[in-house]
Length: 305
Image 1 (tube, helix red, strand yellow):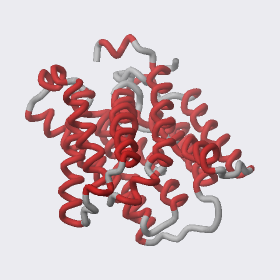
Image 2 (spheres, helix red, strand yellow):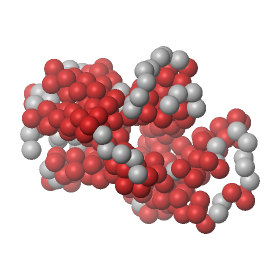
Image 3 (cartoon, one colour):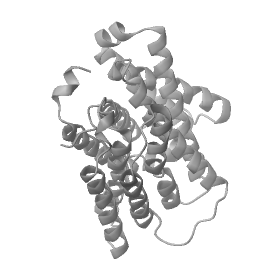
Image 4 (cartoon, rainbow, N blue to C red):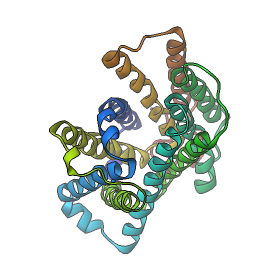
């Protein structure tokens, strides 16, 4: 991690914002793809392509870092991330998109407690307060009307949030022992393989006729930008800043998702949306003003900028 220490923490946080912009737009880009490709097959094609391409780009780096333990670590990341996406999709089939998005974002509350268990770094009251404030903002942004009951769809979405939180904490922990970009390449390949296995076992492949130029273009976007670029940014950033802070920045994905929907699909800006946006940004300001305790300063991002 020696080279990374020369880069200030704020640069990693700014990079995470770029990733959330990409993921926010990916909600729009995926509209046509998910209508023709079942979820597991979609993940299979997306992450296999991303994994093969990233491995080719970083071949010398991956070969140098490769070992049995590194392969196992990358496979663990791939399993956690694939299961998170998988359960999120199942949840979406049984609840509304807004509630699905909101419950997925509860990872920003789960992450500090998981990090406490794994790294023995207790979250401060400001970490928890900021996470709860962000959740209220995400609720206002995502759940536009109606209430919420706890059914099968909601339960699966909460499981997905736990798995996303596990993935973030695993990246923060495992990147201390392995090259994080090489790990990301292995993660993608493992995730892609799991997609094909689950797809073959549980879904019907629609045939190669669905791969029109438009669909191929969107898959390329998902593999190149929503996977290689955005996940690469996230995983590298998680190696240098505390996961509790990173998870709050990652919650901006919900904001950019709505903003792209407003810009491209004519969704109306309401007072509810504006209040939600303000609360999410306030949560990030709190997390930056009152950082994690410095006495555990083994991790680069645990100092003020």
